[in-house]
Length: 296
Image (tube, rainbow, N blue to C red; front, top):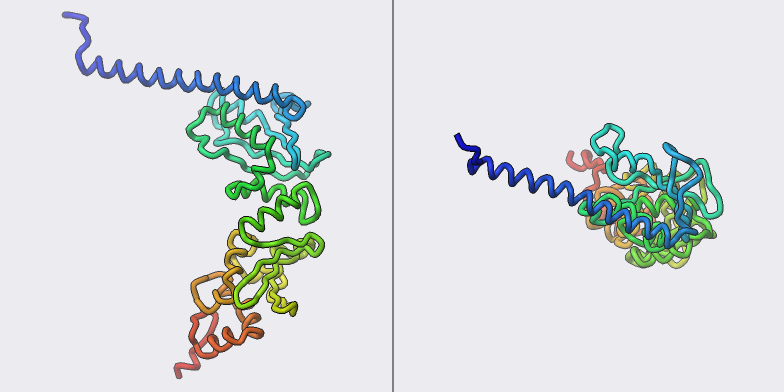
């Protein structure tokens, strides 16, 4: 009986070797990424450093241009040590967002995942996150980083702040909208001479936005708080592009939220004759219209 390995056994050994080599490569890449991470921290030692708390409450502190940030380290270290334990975090942990100049207990939290980081070693992902926070103005303007942007908006509110000029540029560039920080209002041009206004930014009693319109400076309020009459009441990514097509959108019957809001449609119809005529004639189908009497 010989000790020669049969062909199937040889294939198994080769596959096992490839597997072990792949695991070794992930460890090597993480060590390279660790050097990259260390270099970023050393090059920015005045703005990136370890916080005063020790494990398990340790943080990396990043002082950005718009705010200050804490990256909790314990879940990251746990994931690096053993990603299979129950406490291992899936993805990067939420980043604490604090206003410039102070730390607050009731801080906001942002979920920031670097683009394409699924293909990168974990240490690279952490390094890229820190680089992004150092250049937080660019991160704020990234359309895909809504969690980060919203956290900063909740941190500062709709007042003049470190983010106010950037937010004005973002609204104008993404939606063609303008913001008035004095009145707490976002405005965008619609169709048929309408200008739409999303207000209530300074009013704590308004849960989403008030909606009004103006034509030749005449202002009409259609909803004191869209929270009560719409589904996408808090989403500017929905509201602003939709309002640029209003009031024409009410005649097209192609939108099932703003275009079907009973309160808003009825209010607009009081002031815009084409919509009022379309409702009266039955040219548009609105789910809340009861036309049972018309069929008798």
